[in-house]
Structure formats: structure tokens, C-alpha cells
Image (cartoon, rainbow, N blue to C red):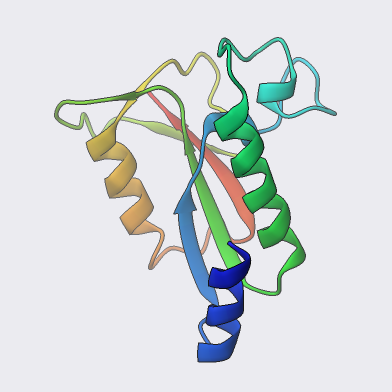
Length: 124
């Protein structure tokens, strides 16, 4: 990510949209922690969440316009187009989301401006 941010600055590109784990969203049960740091996480390994946390930290420190889409458990199959999103927190009771719906929402953020400089939890 440091190289991507540097290249974006060099090329004058300001907007980045990326997909990260729902583990980097704020915990509802422990608001001072991220989900992967709290009892909300059901994962045995936190390696991916720790790496995504570093990306979040770097983007937060940058002057870029960024959005990190944070799906919960990704499932193969067709999209339902009936998903919920929530800024910085996973939608309540969200357990899964399809790859297709995650991709559709991520693509929509190219034109949308409602989740600038934030993480977005996405789930059914």
C-alpha cells in the first residue's frame, strides 16, 4: 500500500476504493476496538485483519479520498441485490454476503460520494 499511495500521488490520482475484511470495522460490543480485536470475531487467525488494519491506517493518514468496503463472510453464488450497508460498522446481524453483491456495491462507489474516507460494512 505505501507504493500504491506514492504512485497515486505521483500520478495525481486522488480516489481509491478497496475491499478489506469486516474485521477492521468498529466493534459494536467494544466500541474502542476493531471487530478482529474483540469477542465479535469468530476467526482463529487475525493475520488478514491485521494486514488490512495496516492498510486502513495508511489510507487514514493519506490525503487520498478512500473507501474500504468490508464484507462479512463472502459466499459464491448469484447476488441478491438486497444487501445492507453501514458506515464503519457491520450491519446488525450480518452473517454473509455474496461476492457478486460485494463487487456491485464496490463498483457503485466509483460514482457515489456517500462513504468517502470511511469503511463500509456490507452484509445481508
